[in-house]
Length: 68
Image (tube, rainbow, N blue to C red; front, side):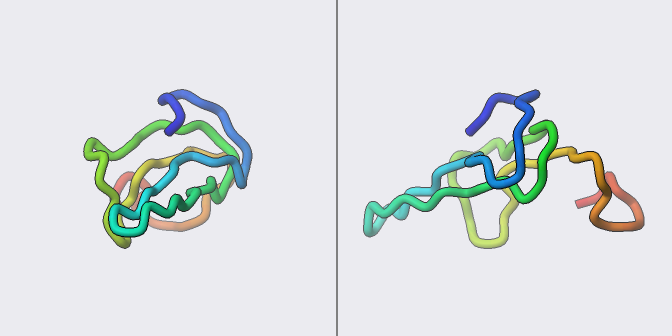
């Protein structure tokens, strides 16, 4: 996983998830370009759980932006 403050492009690899049963590795790619500013405190990923946040230059939603 990149260090906080890393500046990346859309489609850059930001994490690798290893399936503990099969050993297969899946790459997680950024959906937007921007600054990587937050990551999960745990090293275990769960379905639907956020593993990090990237601040881009274009908003992709409305409303309270600081809420999950």
